[in-house]
Amino acid sequence: MKKGKFISCMAITAAVILSATLLALAAQQPPETITIKPSIWKTFTKPLVTFSHKKHVTEDKIACNQCHMIMKDGKNVWKEGDPVEKCEKCHNEPTTQMEYKLTPEQKKLNLKLSFHNLCITCHRKVKNQHPTVNAPIVCAGCHKPAAAK
Ligand code: HEC
Ligand code: HEC
Ligand code: HEC
Ligand code: HEC
Image (cartoon, helix red, strand yellow):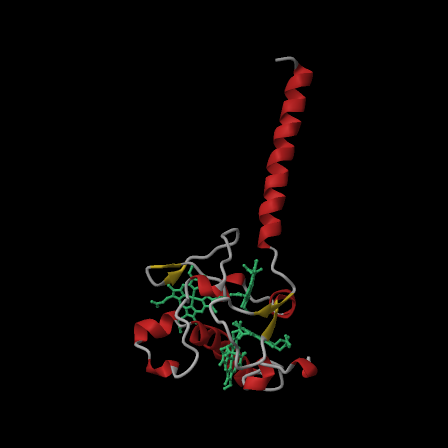
């Protein structure tokens, strides 16, 4: 192969690798704010919850794997670059009323409890340490009526 041809080959290979990397990174970029509306629920009894990656990730520097997970032998092995799945992909037990009646196994996979356990447990810890921080633990702090947003 002539030198010129070899170099352009290298350049193309480099460009392909670079764009593949950029695509993978773009797929990982968390949306700034999202309205969480799981598709396994057909009706909602509370106003939908808005969640801000900007606040949690960019400002408060909370690591992705505090919330996103791939469980192996009871451990969260999610690491940077792994796909981010919606919670309902795994937590697909849909009960939203009287979920306290479910078995312990069902509770772990119950979607409503999974959200509440993740979000409210951390907010409680935060409030214990910094009582004035806006990390809501009351219903209306997360389930804000549209008019209050
Ligand atoms: C404090 C919790 C929390 C942290 C930290 C967090 N996320 Fe999220 N993220 C969520 C929640 C909740 C959703 C919505 C999941 C759902 O709809 O089931 C979400 C959704 C996403 C989505 C969209 C998934 C989809 O299919 O709609 C991507 C991509 C994402 N996060 C990437 C990231 C990355 C990358 C990081 C770290 C830089 C990160 N997140 C940190 C809670 C968090
Ligand atoms: C790839 C599958 C998967 C995804 C996606 C996933 N989880 Fe989990 N999650 C699990 C498994 C499996 C467990 C462990 C259950 C056990 O202990 O047997 C778990 C455990 C938990 C627990 C601790 C057990 C409990 O209910 O107290 C919480 C809280 C939780 N997940 C919330 C979430 C939230 C919120 C999301 C979305 C941001 C999410 N999970 C995404 C599979 C997943
Ligand atoms: C690991 C800890 C942690 C987890 C998990 C977490 N949060 Fe937070 N959250 C915080 C902290 C810290 C703040 C205070 C933000 C600030 O003022 O800088 C906060 C603030 C908020 C606020 C008020 C600020 C705003 O964005 O309007 C809302 C709403 C909120 N969180 C929703 C959620 C929801 C919904 C979830 C679960 C999907 C969640 N959080 C999970 C730590 C957490
Ligand atoms: C830290 C945030 C947070 C707090 C506080 C919170 N929730 Fe939620 N809740 C969520 C998230 C996130 C979801 C799932 C996404 C959605 O429904 O938009 C959810 C879902 C629900 C659902 C199932 C969906 C529906 O609308 O029927 C019910 C019911 C619910 N919450 C009731 C409550 C009640 C009652 C309280 C107060 C005792 C409360 N929540 C406090 C974050 C919170």
